Image (cartoon, rainbow, N blue to C red; front, top):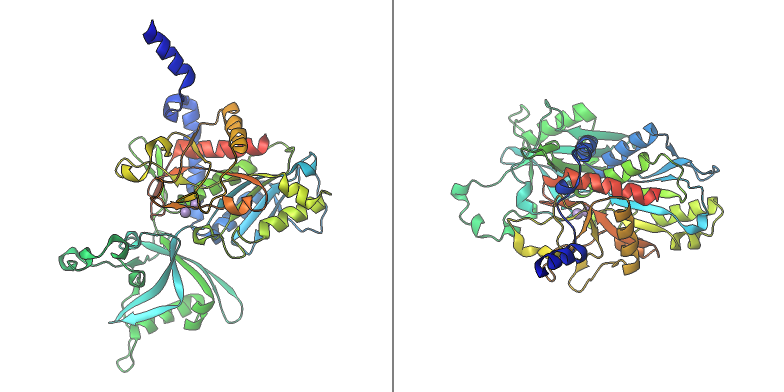
Amino acid sequence: MSESKAKDLKKELFSKKKNAGLIMSESEIKKADDFCKGYMRFLDAAKTEREAVRESVRLLEENGFVEYDFKNALKPGDKIYINNRGKAIIAAIIGSGNVTEGFRINAAHIDSPRLDLKQNPVYEDNEIGFFKTHYYGGIKKYQWTTIPLALHGVIINSKNEKIVVNIGESEDDPVFCVCDLLPHLATQQMKRTLSEGVKGEELNILIGSRPFKDDEESEMVKLNIIDILNKKYGIVEDDFISAELEAVPAFKARDIGFDRSMIGSYGQDDRVCAYTALKALLDCDCIPNKTVITVLTDKEETGSDGNTGLNSSYLKYFIYDLAEKLSGNARQVISSSECLSADVNAAFDPTFPDVLEIRNASKINYGVCVTKFTGSRGKSGTSDASAEFVARIRNLLDSKDVIWQTGELGKVDLGGGGTVAQYIANLNIDVIDVGVPVLSMHAPFEVTSKIDTYMAYKAFKVFIED
Ligand code: MN
Ligand code: MN
């Protein structure tokens, strides 16, 4: 008797979280798999923040959104977007309800760790041509050697013309790479720590080796490369000074596993939340009560500073301007707004169990992860969502059959990280991190679960449709 009573009590009282694959119907799992096909196309089309904005604009316009000018009147149901310098974007659907009740915001970032070219990048050393790079965001430098790299970005020439660069993605394009030392001669290198194994100034990208035919002059390999670039793009060496060129992995998003349950790709932090938050807005087919907004921001990986990052005022100004346009008090509107900071979390990796505290770590296939706080040490650098707001989101997700879990970024004192949540909270908005668990985060090839990705989409959708 006591045995079954304990069993019943456990059933009633203990947490019921389990692998989503055990809970979802076959047809819902199929929906998740199908949803991820669009996500994987987005990953391939949007490897940089600029490309993510361009691809988002394409999807928004396809779905009836128009670029907004604040001179124009607004009415419920209007679908608008504004493009911040081609590197960040805010899209919104105007709600039908009382504007002073605030807006609903999903905020994700579209920049990812990568190798940026320096402003004077081209050089020749011992008759081999290279680019000097300066890495962007938190990377393990050794992971960026000996993989094919593509070059994406823009060059603005002396006539102020913008040249868009995208080399290494099509099958017949050349690719580039960073070389590493052969193990036979790496005895000294192997004694370096992992963080110093390959140093920042050793991340030099191989770009050519054939000299311009001239026996008299020096730097003939460099000359030959710049001559090729001049013929292709009309640029000269100094044009790199006003360029933003990013070296990113040249491979495409792929299914992972015999069961195809996972996705491997560059840039899933945070395109997995950017795409799902954008898709939630695109698929919102009713006129929402509250005005709903999706923000896709830049510069999260370097701390959110800069005028395309969320530590700037561009989101605040947008909300203020929208509030005024809708005849609301801007401060009242922003203070009653709510936001999901849509960003990834570290998934538990059984190969490296020591860094995560298993009872409070996110696991792949356990659904979208709700993270109350990020930061490091004693919750430094985090907004820490209130219990009230956590309850509101928890109950919303439960009531709409969104499979979710909670998790924190690593063991106490072992490291940490932040998201845009704190900058949104500092505007006096209720905010909590909600996103997808990722394996190998910040590596050139990051891994997510298709089910978790689909559950993130559902979470962002029920939040704006609620
Ligand atoms: Mn992120
Ligand atoms: Mn990140």
